Length: 542
Image 1: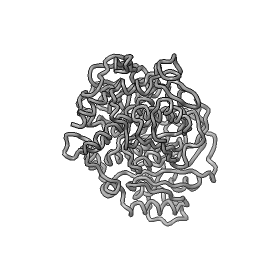
Image 2: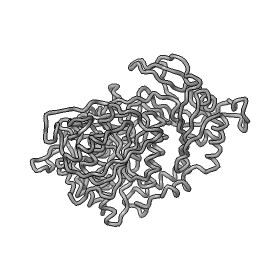
Image 3: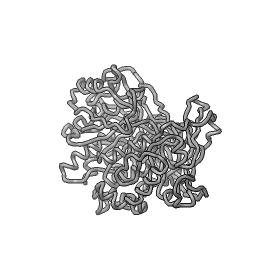
């Protein structure tokens, strides 16, 4: 089974509004503004219902925050991404460089200076200003943060898990002129918590410890030996680390000859190795199985909302064209402002030709586990390709035989995002006009899962955390072919995949994930289905 980042207890609240609050600057600072505005949607809802107040955060405790700013000309940015991602547009594949993006859609240097000056006046230390001028890191003591953002930081104890955490009691506020630029302040709470499931060891299939081998995965999805991902780059978003000795054992056993992964630590990295190590090693080894010569960079960040935003931004800053994401949380487990902040990073990536593939979750149609229907974020983000789960069967010669929907594969309708234009052709009444998940799918059933070497032993691991890198690997193989043909990278893939209208996919028509069943064409369990690498690449290349 797979690891996932779980952010418990957060409840989505209304979309961002800047409501005037008659609170002046602190008395001991200059007061260029007489009013402040709240960043609504940036506070945990229902704290008193599912947590117990235990006190106040120590005034001297140092805390890091990541301040997200709304893009300039956001509607124009939406329109630009729609054009460069649509194969039927003359602008298809004409992505922006980081410099061009900053000039057209980033905040101005004057606006950033205004924010930085304010933060410094409150005693905060300003850190990195990321590319595009849409994310600014800062840090300070709890007392300084309370003063800067006009809120109170308190300590709490989760009534279900017993875990202690801190959180802002009210929405942060800023001087009105600055608040009009800011969409989120990540880091004012640390309720983020890792939750994962242990690997599932089953009766051996073919690989050591059970699970499909690289040959079976490539054969099942018609991956040609001609394309190996050579010259391509893939990023992994991770909140834990790995041991290279385990990766080397896997690569050596299957004679893959893959390049050693590169590690980029964000905000100090993810800390000591934890149980999520299995997740990270699963991601790397699946990429090596299908695209063995691609260069993999593992971005390791802290398991916090500020760490998450910063890690995604670091990936966009790197310019790596393909990213696999196996960590997520139910939409209802996040604040609206947090979702908007992460969405803005994905949108910037799409404008710059970057593609993100995210696992849709392992709890079927009930991602939140509350007895209803819900989907996982970021798989539900309209600038991310959501990847669901299947159970693949291959022949004795490693060819595709059949595939059914995996019961644990996440799928359903978003409660946050309206349906994007590229998905309206397959709009279902059950979607209610909202974003439908997943877009595509791949092998995820843990019995058999995929053959993995982790923490010093072989096992079979499943979950949509295996399916996401299976698709990211395909994107790398496609980009290798596109480069040879003198064409643009796949970038944000969903519009092109929907334009294919099922060509190049294994249409999965049986199986269920709870409230939804597989059917002909697009469905809420497997999207368009899994890929036939040869025919799908040919279709996308035109």
